[in-house]
Structure formats: C-alpha cells, structure tokens
Image 1: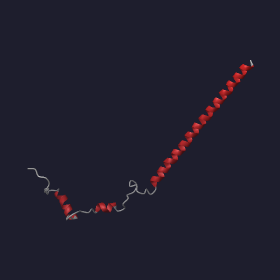
Image 2: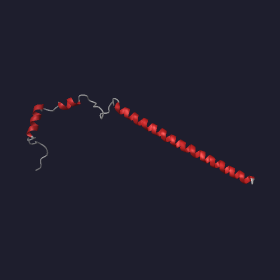
Image 3: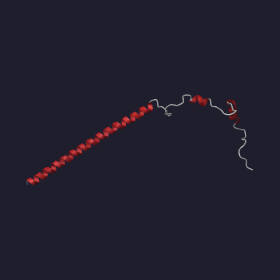
Image 4: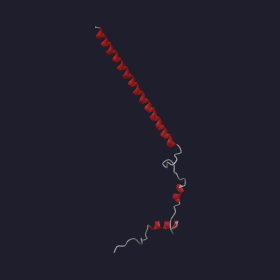
Length: 105
C-alpha cells in the first residue's frame, strides 16, 4: 500500500513540475513578444529619424544640386547653335530635311 502511495505522490509531483514548466514557458513567450514589439517600434522610429535628418546624398528627400532649376532653365546648346536659333527650329517644327546618312540605291 505504501508503494502505491509513493507512486501516486511521484505522479502528482511530476504533474506539478510539468504545470510549472508550462507556466514558465508561457510567461517567457509573452515576454519575448513584448520585447520583440518594443524592438520593432524602436527600429521603426530610428528609420523614421534617419529619413527626417539631412539625408546626405538621398535625392528623394532633397536635391543634391541646389542650382538644378537654374541649370534646367538655361540649358547649354552645342556647336553654332544659340538659344534663339534653337527656339526658331522648334517653332518650325523641324521642317529642315536631314542631310547625310546612308543612301540606298
């Protein structure tokens, strides 16, 4: 009878240990989720702060060349062309026939 009682006691003790292990495991997973959420929030905030700062060479935030608009407004022309002749050619609609190139025949 004493042997059976010892086996029952051992089983109860084992069940209690398993229950305690399960509680510890569940607390650990809850804590991991909480810490992971904090880390992700911090990472997101750091990324946001990086984009809000000067940006350096990131042209999506700020143009690298401060004179970009000025350069686009006053484009250079090559050869004998001047700004006026360039405008005239545009107004003619490119009526001049192209010379040169490969000829068939």
